[in-house]
Length: 416
Ligand code: C6P
Image (cartoon, rainbow, N blue to C red; front, side, top):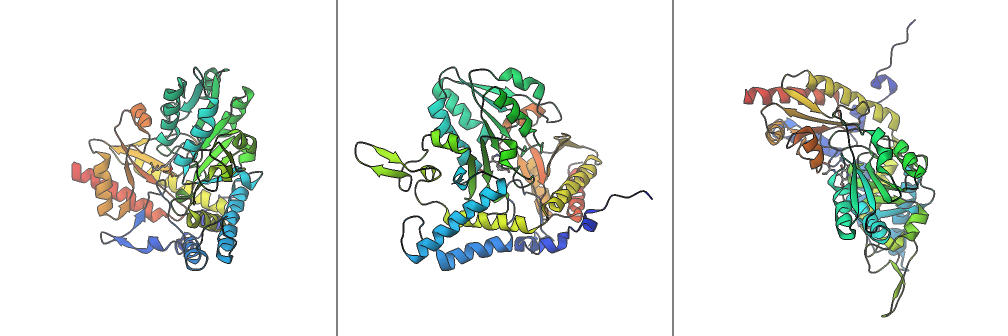
């Protein structure tokens, strides 16, 4: 007998059950059941994360690391407990390698200020890829401008895949850092970051990975990737906004200058000079987003409580189904057709501006994103000002994909 491939449902992914964990999904928008397909911008928050945040505010709210009193100790232990959860989630060697930040933007800027401004000089080079989000591009341009350094760009092909054959030639003794996204937010491409890290390391160059879209959809093991920095945004992985992590290898973080100066990041202060606290405190000046960090810990608990392999398989199936449905509609062009993709479907419709697509879909209760997705060089590559983008999470359904396809057909009818 020939074994047939099991469906996701047979493998045990009960999307109806999972949706109950996300109260926001149960509402109607413009009189229609909400179809939330803007997960790459911000994913929704499960009940246990909401409840954990409420418990902190109700029972534990206090400043951390400062007080000897009961509440401060509870808040500190919840905050540091969240750091331990992050450490295990990304398989860092030590919790002190995980710096809480507001998100990837702050994480990359921290590396730019702490590492870049200290170690990059005139004539040095930074390599980025053509598909970077502005967060992993603009800070490096700012640094290059300040230091007289040069930005080198690893190009991509028309499928939206990096042209790795051109990578080695970009590296030389002046290269100080390679900055690359794990998953492109505009194209969905999963980049071969392990290979990129290995090649860069051969030339002694450290690598920063923008994990904003990687961490929600892929299993991340920073030791296996051997990357030097990995940045995460909590709000894209089912946690509140204001939470995020910059992972850095301890020896690099220790070498770096602090980013923000102030309370909590010092060891001693006199008018003559200050000395700094050990990592990660050196990078966490002032009162951090305590509730958000604790929420990120709860989101990790949630992710650990579900079958993540089945969740990712479900997302891949939604992407496959949506790609099939939309590419079957005349006038629709998919932007981003890499062989390895995660959960993002960018598209344009002949003669229709993506903002109009987004507005009409909203009338149907469908939330997508339209614009340049903070990746203008990607839009330039494909010769479009913007795209419409549907992005999936494991709580989305095939019926929602069908509603998306029907709404896209409606857009075409409206503009015919
Ligand atoms: N992308 C999107 O809709 P922040 O805003 O700091 O949490 O994350 C910035 C960022 C960095 N890198 C990538 C690959 C991203 O996708 C994002 C955020 C959102 O695609 C908002 S533009």
